[in-house]
Length: 118
Image 1: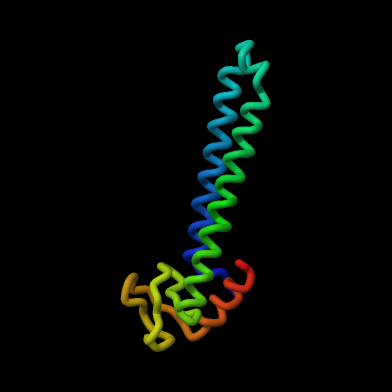
Image 2: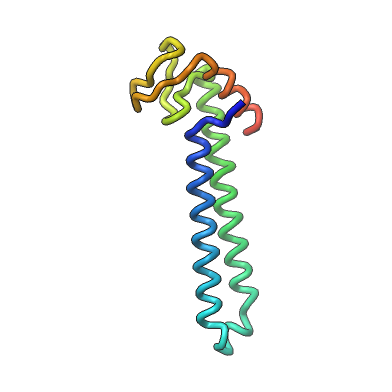
């Protein structure tokens, strides 16, 4: 069973942000590696990198749990592309919010996702 596209998009954005910030830390450490201050404070950069990773990981966990709760509240009938509640709409169909098509496996996909997000 596939992951809802809205979840994959969020995970992708977070991964890009983590890689970008880690690369920026690497560039900063490379530029200032010859300075005495940085040589004595390398653990600061390592700690900053760890903090960035933990912050974004917490963001993913919190947002995925919130999305799973929304899916449960909407009886597992959310648009997989934008998260709009499709309660009262027939499956398959088109989302009134984003206009993208969804199929009859909608509820099953969200149940699997919500079960993993616990």
